[in-house]
Image (cartoon, rainbow, N blue to C red; front, top):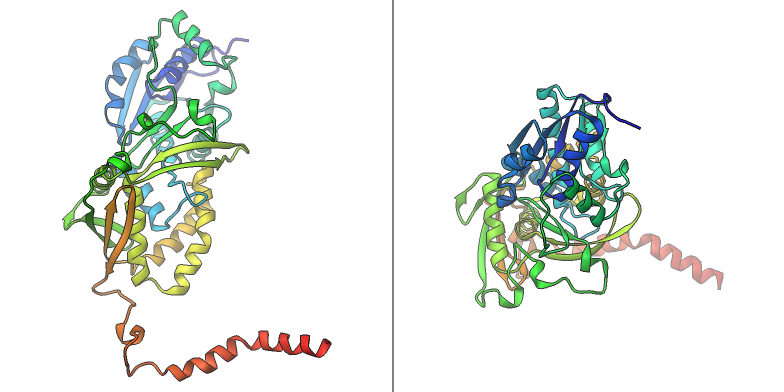
Length: 406
């Protein structure tokens, strides 16, 4: 059944790869609509080279490339790192946190262009379809969303290549690296091919951002990171913008082989999948942030925040960045960060990042007069006896009851 006439103009999230190139042509052919291509520059570098020319050659009426690096780091990555959000204890959410920003800018272009539809290249099995579309509906509840992978009958690379050949879309004659990847300023991810065997080690040639730890420098490197209200603002005394700071940490961490993660994760749609990730800068940032928190954050505030981190991370992973519950939780997290001001010193060595020092000139809650093992005049150790007995009272009562039942 022809879809012609259903849509006048669609904005496509376009990467220039095989899938989105085919989607672009497919939208023109199947819907008979004008297609505006859009690519978000989140720090993927040379991957964006030649995108506008390729989009127009494939049928796009125009192509927008949006430089979102600073907004990405400042308004998405940094708020997430104020929470120390890591999904299932391992994944730094590099792809997850990028999707709401990509969708936000896409909807802005749709409004600017007067488009009545948006489209993406996410498959019907993954998380990205959820992340994109929940964000679309946040900005326009009536927008028409076209998800070709849920509509067409092409279900293999062979079918895609046949379509590309039929419509004159260039296809690489050989694919050196057969796995799929997604890169931005925070990380690069890898899925598919050999990684679908959970027992197989990821091949070394897969890694892009990090040196093989065994081949990293034999000399450790120390890095000092300064924080203000939970956000990193300087590296080794040099103040940097959020995007430049993250790029600097990527460079430092990558040189020492830091930030490689290989995990089986639970997708929101219900299946397990294997992902291999490189997050060198993010790994350093999280270690340093926790270091400054450890000396400046009230115990109960920290424990309360930490009790909510798994839920916060799941909100981002599942695509609910713009949901009210995430915004409310963010307000609590940001309040907890008001005193997280200071310096962390980390040691980078052969794949490991370890906190070795922390300091805060004005917000430190560490008082050596109280904590010292030496003689002091501010803490009466005999006071601990009553403290312990009161805390043990319910256990003592239970023990008495057990004894009387014998």
